[in-house]
Amino acid sequence: MIPVSKMANQVQPSATLAAGANARKLRNEGIQVFDFAVGEPDFRTPEHICRAAYQAMRDGHTHYTPAPGIPELRAAIAKAYCKIGLEVTAEHVVVSNGAKHSLHNALTAAVGPGDEVIIQSPYWLSYSDLVLMTGAKYVLVPTTVDSGFKMTPAQLRRAITKQSRLLMLNSPANPTGAVYSRKELEALADVVLEHDLTVISDEIYDKLVYGDTKASCFATLKPGLAERTLTVNGVSKAYAMTGWRMGWSVGPAHINKAMGNIQSQQTGNPSSISQYAALAALEGDQHCVEAMRREFEGRRELVCQRLTAIPGIRLAPPHGAFYAFFDISAHFGKTLGGRRVSDSEAFCQVALDVAHVNLMPGTAFGADGYVRMSFAASREQITGGLDQLAGLLRE
Image 1 (cartoon, rainbow, N blue to C red):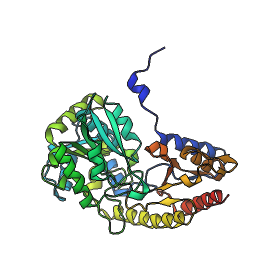
Image 2: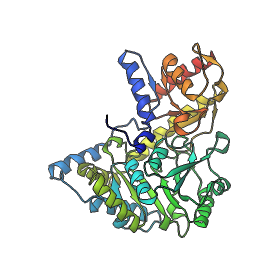
Image 3: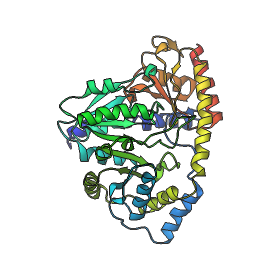
């Protein structure tokens, strides 16, 4: 038998994919499932982006490209950041196979065994495993619904040790939808600069914010931050392009060179065709992004209204992304659908088996007592699913 490495034994399978598989099993049995587990837009990729991919194939752009991405796309990404105050060029950009791949490259280039990476919880479920794959350790800073799922500068200071090398930030955040204000990020930046930390700022949802909320690019906030920040983003969420696998990192040229070297040995270049599609996304008409954002905003209002009307649920209204992360701990110890609920995993299993509502347990995000609901689903699905959930909890 082939022995499994220590690293591979540490890494857990994606809980999101597992939840999707459970929902598909019920659908295959002919059962209607209200599925709010998977974090991807339910919109089609805009037509002009698809046409660009087809044209790229017709033009023969189906071969290897430079490992960090085609010059045109890297330049377009750099131009977009220059517009918001981050003075970078194409050499500061590495294009990868999705933002998750960019995060992996950034962590692999920046930390290793003996280092500590600070992550606030709840956190996107892949962060911890991506850190472990480098040989580093992660340190969690817990936040709650009462704090709006935001880490304070005092909490960050308390988490820092002699081994601390890197802070992972995510705003707008998955799973909570929390968005740090500029002032809040500046306060965290003071601690970062004081303690000489590197920062990976995951800003994949920066175009999906609601009301008067504005997303801030962390690297632009204070002098000295750009030299220690790797900004990760991509086209998956804002342009409904999850399957195209196009992400990028923007940061200091020396660390980007290291990331490019890693990627050249690891995967080579990202998809040539997807790169031309991403270029069309960035340089083309942006009305498609705003139309999707407005629809998500309307769904957010519907979800917040419905959830806050259900007894035993506490919600910090999300201001970005497309998730509601709500406290269901008041139902622990109760019997729902003939089963006793002891934790968020049991709650989600009952919701799926009895009410046919598919949610993600908070344990997957480092926060038992909560569940995540994606509102990247039609209003009809949202209304039907929350009717089912409310009926279950009335028991």
